[in-house]
Image 1 (cartoon, rainbow, N blue to C red):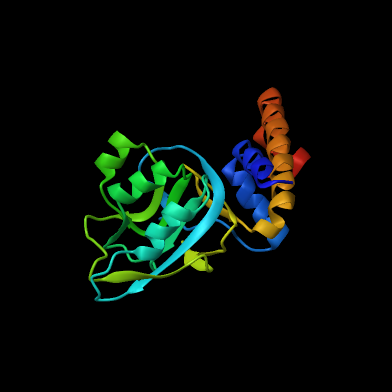
Image 2: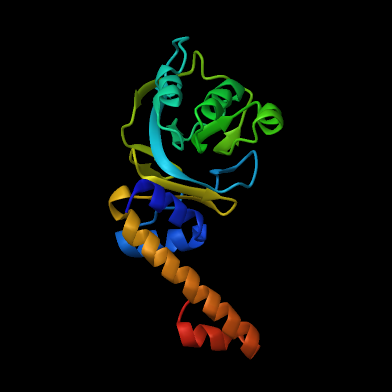
Length: 216
């Protein structure tokens, strides 16, 4: 299955079903903790991860790896920045958003803060999921150290090329190796839940629907 086919498939299934499928296929959770949430809009994002690692530094240097990744990554990428859960600085703002929009990226996932929210909403409506909101800069506090290496965001390890699925329910990381199997199972879960919901409505009984399908 091509990347485009996977992305199209994941757009059509519930994010919760993707989380359940990752649990079953990989044997471990792929959903980020609830602090990583949408800050700009409720749009669903699906795309391959491009990863950036930031770490503490007192150097006044731009986040070069992140800037390069925005300009050099394929259209449709999800820019994923790890800063160790630091909540008091913003690793993303208006100018980076402008670059991401210019390069047709899908969204940004941040284990840190975002700023310039009013500008991003007004001018770009670009999906950003972050741990926090902060006006503070990383300059003199953090710097980027590498790109496209595994990083931890929201308690989940994200590898370059993993499929990131995010919406108002949260963010799920699908390991690229298991993406086809996860998608197939998520589609099955969606279909089964649709049938189960219909039975519950028709029968007028939640218990009856649960008894037949053994799922909640």
